[in-house]
Amino acid sequence: MKKWLAIPIVLIFLYLVCHTTPELSLRSHVGYMGYFKSAFTSSIVEDEYHNKMDKKKLQKDNAKCYTLTKPPIEEATQGVLRNFKVKKVGFLYYTDYYGEL
Image (cartoon, rainbow, N blue to C red; front, side, top):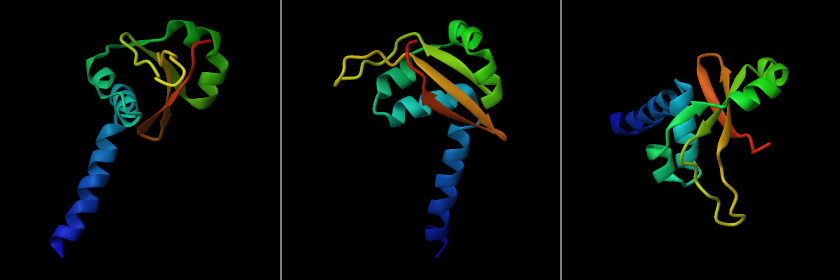
């Protein structure tokens, strides 16, 4: 019985850890997308362009944009997955792809 209880507790703990900082949220999101190499090797910097241009929208969403320095390339469209929006909800951070422009 204890083993069955331990599995959900460990999964919940991992979920919380993966969403405690913007960087961890972004890295886990890119990893979930299937780009494990980019998730661990790419540096993360604030996307000054999108943060400045979409300031009102991002403030409304309680979010910031970040850029990967070594972004993954999507195989189907050959698009570069460089910019991501990280939204803060409570004490957790959630990431979505933001696009190029």
